[in-house]
Amino acid sequence: MTVPADEMTPMSEALAPVADTPAASSGLPPEEIDRMTDAIVAALKTVYDPEIPADIYELGLIYRVDIADDRHVAIDMTLTAPGCPVAGEMPIWVENAVTSVPGVKDVTVNMTFDPPWDQSRMSDEARIALDMW
Image (cartoon, rainbow, N blue to C red; front, top):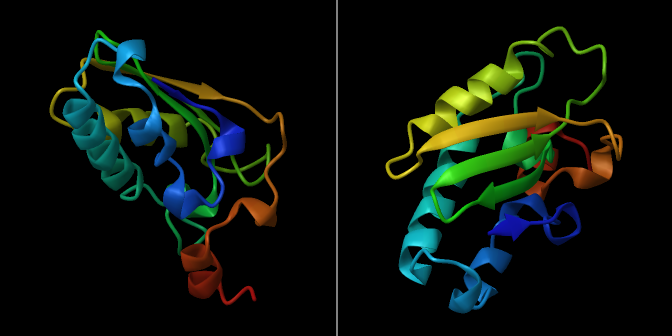
């Protein structure tokens, strides 16, 4: 079950398209996909960039989440800048957070800078937290 980056805006609704995907495209029952999706989003929201008081999900750093039939989760993410001091650590934090979700078999985190992150990817929640209106 793939959620492409262009369907992930705004971030607060990023994984909502999963529920609208026909069940025939997945071997997992729709209820299980919904449960896993909600739990993965909750797990992603526990990961913060230590320099920014907003979680990586609301910042728009998560570009794609794919839940495969075998419960392998693949995540494409970015950073606010390629030179971010936690560039080597944050993917591990994401992997650890999502691995803790019941039903997730394993997790692969892919770092990408294409497209580059910009402030338009932030949710309203992140904008409020950062006072960026």
